Length: 146
Image 1 (tube, one colour):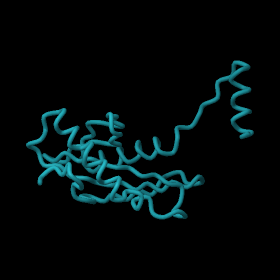
Image 2 (cartoon, rainbow, N blue to C red; image 1 turned 120 degrees about the vertical axis):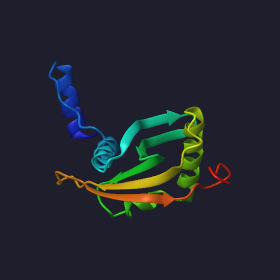
Image 3 (cartoon, one colour; image 1 turned 135 degrees about the vertical axis):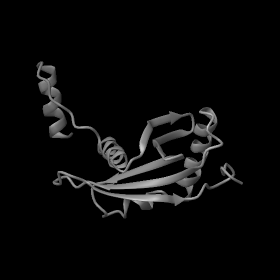
């Protein structure tokens, strides 16, 4: 049993409010969105859930629809965060992007896939953010332009 969880739960049962930190992934997505907005992107959707999965961020960069996959890690011990966007993940993101474009009648606009890698160690105030524009092409039978 996690002693911190027990302590927090006990205080809440006694009527004390104890703030819970957002999960690392949510904090990473929020920082990635802020980072992209500073670069001039317009964030049009966050955590857009569909039947087959979720798009982390959907943004507009000039006239291009950008599907942003955000990967957040505490360290690089298990590899770089961007390495988690493997071919299977790319295939799922391609399918989700096509569904999004169809749903919002945006098929005539150019689209691309970006990856934002966020490394946020427990003792760091600010994360390290790396942005990979046009990180991969559309993959699989749901390719956007084939």
